[in-house]
Image (cartoon, rainbow, N blue to C red; front, side):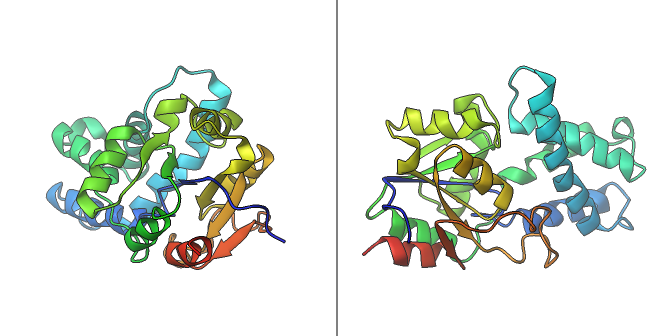
Length: 240
């Protein structure tokens, strides 16, 4: 039996709401062609850049480093990815690297995302609960028509998921008990961390997030409060 309905829905964004892989591959393809390195597989490059994210989050939590935005972390990961593919950042156009780093600001939503969130908002406040910074979320929202009641996440809580503070401070800022906030995500590790903090959980299946390959956390627990094939299906359940 499902728990009582939440009062607010907080969305993971990368992978859950937007198709990061297609957008990053698009921009990487142009960057590599312009730099004269079109023989490098842009999909492999995009995947390598994204997979550094998991390591970076763990390292950040353990380092005691002061908070920096995801734009900064993405740039550091990009420089490392370039080197892994035999490209020295210092030998490339610095403005082109900076522009490629903003690929994460230009991601397109999954086909069900805009309408699904719009319908969910007819009954509930809907916010971002993301590791992305506010400027990034704002640019994506204005580009694609995503409607949010508030842009919340790591830059507001000063904590990255899956740190408990990322979830608990979000609930506190909304004036909610943890169980009154539902994390909506396509990532089992994110949902598991939220559930450990007392949040409700809603899983959105995104089988193409990693190009059809299993997600890095695919073997994690899948016993969530709700499990849906898209945000539109979640809205169908919640908007009675």
